[in-house]
Image (cartoon, rainbow, N blue to C red; front, side, top):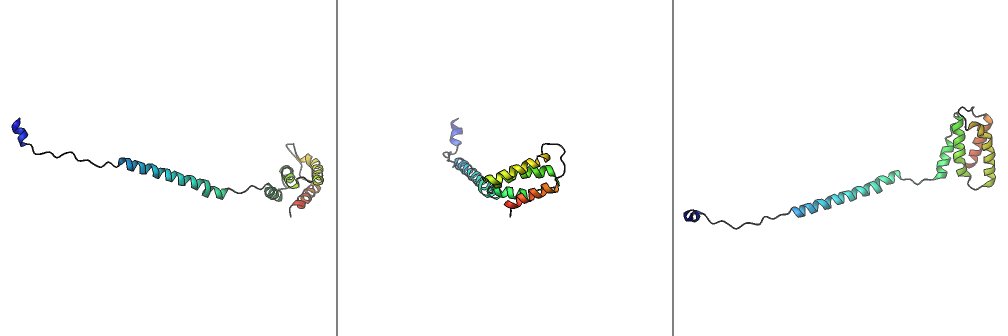
Length: 134
């Protein structure tokens, strides 16, 4: 056994291998965090700003009233009843006129089959709308 040990060459001491796995892991976590932050920013501010428009009920009401389809009398009356009060606001005199016109138009509502709008009712609706839309 001594002969065998004497034949052994000198063994070098262990060499320390640099371990950078902790720093690589930390860099990966920071990169993922920054990518997520950029993605959230893009979705919230860039992409959302194209879709996000300020809702203006008066502007929407005017647009809907301009595009009333008088061929469908039921939908025309419902659209008129829904959007015109937005334009009237607090004007009591106009509100009273609107309520009177609503009573005249009830024959076109709450039924499965409704008659076509009479020419007089159509003119009354158009005149009332034209007061607010110019």
